[in-house]
Image (cartoon, rainbow, N blue to C red; front, side, top):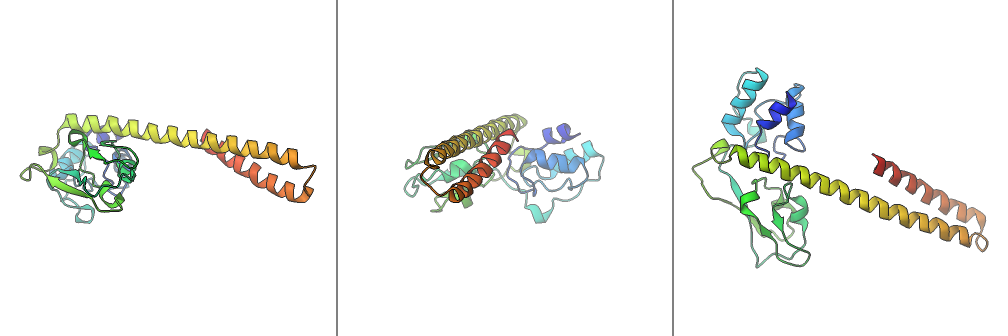
Length: 214
């Protein structure tokens, strides 16, 4: 049921449902921990889809989680963009391209309208525009777009995991080099001070290795 529910969600990864992503929300719905009316991008039709899958009664969209509305696309004002890359990191589907200290651009065809880039921008240069104000929910967002967004989000997650592993590997290598330096200096430094430093470094190494394995 989790896979079926996840397939019925728009995959905007906006977190407005109260969960980290669409799949997490699907798990919560399948386990009875979340209502079927917490997805504003899916709107009324989305609720009907989830009702058919779960056998639950359809409910009005939860106002606590937002309102159904037209698909909004992010627009970056190039005159104000400082190239900080924070919006790139916030985008769950990697639809913002750019580089440090260079202007960023949103790929409209890939933008899910999640709005997560807006609060991430320190200079408020990102606005949201509606291309078709008369369309909302699944009328504004197709199944093909949802499938493509799901794949881009999966790639985004893999990219984050790989970056975390690479960073952990660098920290481990740096800590191991520090241990070698401490061993070389052991003949010139008070043993108790070296032992304290070595204990701190070895503890950090253990944490880093555990994180990499996890």
